[in-house]
Length: 130
Image (cartoon, rainbow, N blue to C red; front, top):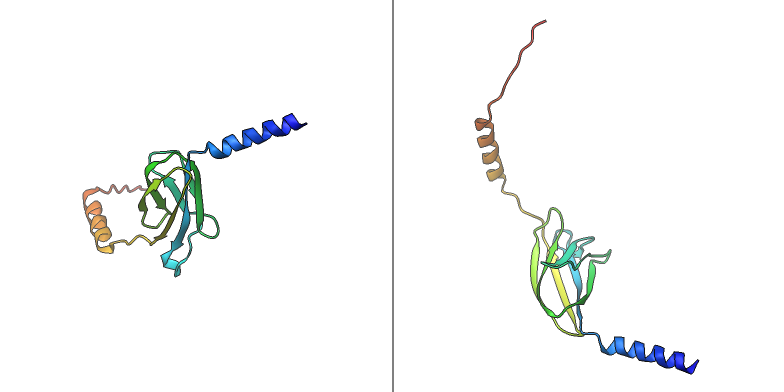
């Protein structure tokens, strides 16, 4: 029994001291809702498979990241995307607090594009007689 505890203790200590990864965590807020938490926003480290979504409190955490410099991309449909550079260090947590704002739409440009597309597309009208 002593041997089992000794082996378990050694394995646990090796995994605890052998960790050479970091993590990124933080909070995303919705500026359109007066700073309320941004629910289910997408958070990812660009160019990697590390990604997550914010929870009901606007919090997120991505763990077990190899140390290095990354771009944290934050997005939500209908909102402007935000990119934040982060430097992940061994055995450290990088805290990121950011905010998302709704996309602005230039109505004049949309109307101009609509007029151009209507003038360039020929309309075929068919008539049928009974």
